[in-house]
Length: 416
Image (cartoon, rainbow, N blue to C red; front, side, top):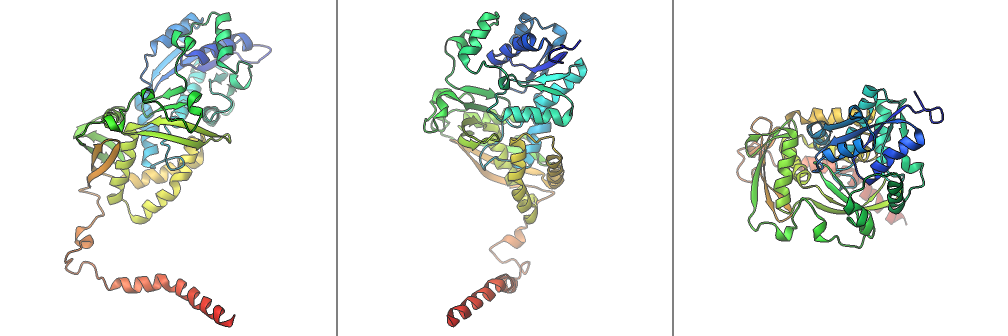
């Protein structure tokens, strides 16, 4: 039965088991008087998730109301891979590692709400961040009448000290390291990346300490010998590494391992948040860095020039849609249809050379779909395949408007 004061009967909480969401769980019970369902997504964050289950039980959540789901394959197959077919980079650099995970979580929040008869969903994103927008736009796109509870926009627990005091008052178990010290920044991880922000990183002039990084060695400490890796593509997606076919999640995990040991994938960025402020973040996206570089390489020989240009024109718009939380919007879906149509011929092999923080293309081939014609491109005798005299008319025609403008400019100067 719905609480008479709040109108909420049951709420599904995106639950990590950390301080913030554990406090939110208890707060929802106290303030909203609602039955709480917890949802914990395994998207490759590299942490054991069973402690989240145990903590939920400690906080009074019934076992049938605790959902922990392995979404790694869905995450890479249905979200990461489509995004990389678009070569998406927000503001020319950010590979959208956090952004692309949020619509997946929103999707399952809504699905669990339907399954359990919940009338609301809740998340732990702050009122300053982008994630509140991403979670909620995703939820509303999939279930327009769902109610969203965002505690950070309602409560007065706006500091770590207040959260810890609330946890003490209500007997909420808090990890000792977090309580006494912990990292001087916040961290978000999934199979595509790790992001670090806040705390000491709020000074954009502060260089992160080497000890902060988790999945990449520094380029200086990477092996002195280059490593060559062969990537096989089918319809724009990597399906095999060094000839071994792998599932999407295993492809990304393997690329993370290869790139990480070679010091590839670090980024220090000041980005423009959707809510209007500038924010400094430091990222590790090792496998994604290889994916972007290699995908552009295979497209360079399999896509028509104007299709490449059109994709490059559309990419910044696509990236902003992902960053701003519009994954389920009609315009992103429409762009994806166009992009995926272009990928039907993006088949072949790319050989990459990994060396001390860099990804270099060491070769690319497409036996069935390559548009690269050596007989035309050669600087040697092409035996008539290309008539160089044709270039004269092409150049003169393209220069015509500039010649007309130049003649007019001369006439104006003479009159003056």
